[in-house]
Image 1 (spheres, rainbow, N blue to C red):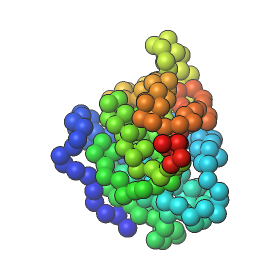
Image 2: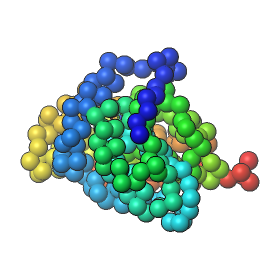
Image 3: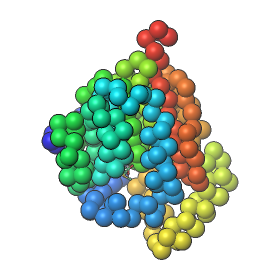
Length: 247
Ligand SMILES: C[S@@+](CC[C@H](N)C(=O)[O-])C[C@H]1O[C@@H](n2cnc3c(N)ncnc32)[C@H](O)[C@@H]1O
């Protein structure tokens, strides 16, 4: 089920040492991820539902989907349930996470294929009608995010959708500070050490302002770019590839 991917000759040079820390982190935490994630991410389950509800495809449609940074496969499982005729390719840099998702999605058999890949230099096995991504793109530097958005558009069928749930920055420093204070309070209320979570976030993550990411989607050529859900420094957003008739 899991094939190896990734290209050592990355077309987007970036901080490989930081990405190795990200990979090691998710390898180490893959078996406890599902237990802790809802205590760290405000509205994690709501985000799943918001993203699912934003998919502009009929439930019976036969199509191919991709999940970028599939993790333990929770979001992918929801897509596979709601769209029983869809097939899905899940990509992730962490072998530990791919093992978890392989187990969690085993009931879907050949409808699921998993591949180890770094989103910075991924070769998509497209085309897809749907590309989703949860909490993975903030691991990429901004230029690499923008490049990924362009490449996702190339991998989408005309009219296909790209939907993301992400941790974001505010559009100003003041807004980011306020959002981080609210986030810290949420983490503390859930019995976790907010300083530890924020320190790891600063070490491993490079989130971008929501407004900038919406702009990069438009620049890449996406249409109907919008925010479907927002709470604190988390958002569900995305856009659609132009229809063939729009060209
Ligand atoms: C916070 S988890 C999110 C998992 C799942 N998508 C979700 O929404 O719960 C981030 C996932 O992205 C993966 N990831 C991080 N950076 C990546 C990269 N550069 N390429 C591919 N996967 C990456 C991690 O290994 C991890 O499985």
